[in-house]
Image (cartoon, rainbow, N blue to C red; front, side, top):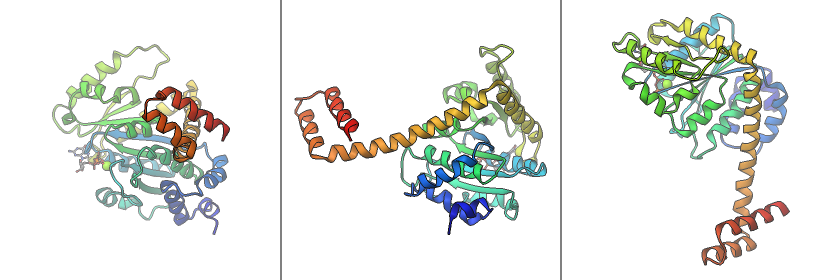
Length: 313
Ligand SMILES: Nc1nc2c(ncn2[C@@H]2O[C@H](COP(=O)(O)OP(=O)(O)OP(=O)(O)O)[C@@H](O)[C@H]2O)c(=O)[nH]1
Ligand SMILES: [Mg+2]
């Protein structure tokens, strides 16, 4: 059975198995990517982030509905660095997303860490290759929280929507969490609650304070009530405007090149750390380490010796 061929022919099971292989860092990943890479480059990747419980999944669900009405094929990837589980959306999301279950134009998948640190953003990138090659027009990547993994994952997205709620704190916290730099669009969700106008006002002030001229994209701030589908159409329009803007400005092409460079960097670091472990365990490596521990070598000289061994191997 050729998984890639079956996946390209629209087989869902093949798609799920390919994603699991990437997630588990299966030995066949390089072969899979080699087959798929030429078929990538069409999908738009939208990142959706924000504090836990802000309404990200509810918004994603609504966006999927609206995109389906426009006949777009949509994939949703929920990235949860804290979760070792994967293969299906977490319970609440699964119930919410059930309405898309019979729809062949929608694919929903969660990605967890499977006990491996650092590899999640690499795996996510490769999952995006698969979904892109599978012909999805738009891939929505939902991440919660604001750790380094989440920021790495969001770096992959062409457009990032930061979802905030009145009770998630003020704009100072937004700045601290590094969300200001990554936000292309702000959604102030649960705008049925009091205090949402204050948050909108604060965000407007903050966005307006950024250095900008007529060629700068200033993140628009949209009020939404995801559970009642209020404001979702305007949010969608803002995301689409941002996509058009980055295409016109050339930013999209730069991002695409960064994405590939990141992928190659990830592959190289994976390879390097594996060969480093081997060298540390080798006879020569053990000798260098011993001298280092006994202060006969300093760390820089030791590193030089190791890099000489690597360049010879
Ligand atoms: N009042 C109100 N509740 C909302 C709104 N949007 C979503 N909710 C509710 O907020 C709760 C959390 O929504 P989710 O969509 O699961 O939030 P999330 O950001 O995906 O949560 P995590 O993935 O756990 O971080 C649910 O009970 C939603 O029904 C809104 O606009 N107003
Ligand atoms: Mg969620």
